[in-house]
Amino acid sequence: MVNENELIERMLDIAFDEDIATGDITTNSIIAHSEMAVAELRMKADGVISGLAVAKRVFERLDKNIEWQPMAQDGDSVHRGQVILRIRAGYRTLLQGERLALNLMQRMSGIATETARYVAELRGTHTHLLDTRKTAPGLRICDKMAVRHGGGLNHRMGLHDMVLIKDNHIKAAGGITAAVQAVRRVTPVSIKIEVETTTLDEVREAADLLVDVIMLDNMDNETMAEAVSIIGGRCRTEASGNMNRERLSGVAAQGVDFISVGALTHSVTALDISMNFVPEA
Image 1 (cartoon, one colour):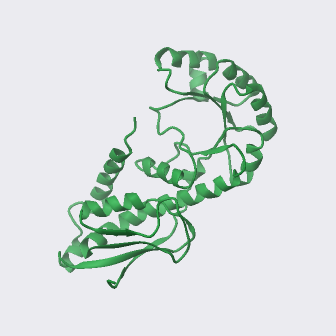
Image 2 (tube, helix red, strand yellow):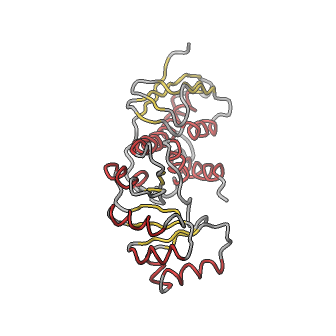
């Protein structure tokens, strides 16, 4: 079972080592240790905010006694010019944590914003949006949190928590049936099994095995509709491959349960956020 808190702490360990390491020589040379300040984080674009909780952990690593005053929560829609957070802490704490906190928040908010746009295309259907493993190494926990904040669902966290039998597994095993049987011999029944299919014959074979999910990979809408009919509710269905926002409503109309989109996390456009010092109220 994945412990999100542990993963975040391990990620922050590496982030602090690469950014601060033995200390911020510029800030420590200029700013007295005891000097206090107030900083505001302000949106420079419209979107969905994500990463506030992670940013708080960044600053708390530097000072457990920061005064944290959020004006928004992860998952909220925000607009350009909106102040989303006010922090009171030492100048050193604010300056040392600024870049790391903003890097994480801007990436996560970009993912949440794009996810929300995709989710909007599925409104009124029974189809849910899934992410993939196409995440930045070391940042998967943040990327997947951001997808949830945008209204999407997480697929498997990694190779360890769900079986996904893909084309190369099928080739190596000698077929879908052989691959599924091999998995079932050694895998607890609590672990879900998904099989990737590219043809209707593969769909029939996987459906007859009563796996949990059948992936319909790179199929056109007509083929997907036929595949859903063949499956007949025996397994859940996931459409995958070259999915973009323009395709989503049409794919959902074929009756699939899930659509997975790698672009949510592999092609991130950061959402611009600034941090500036302001006078104390």
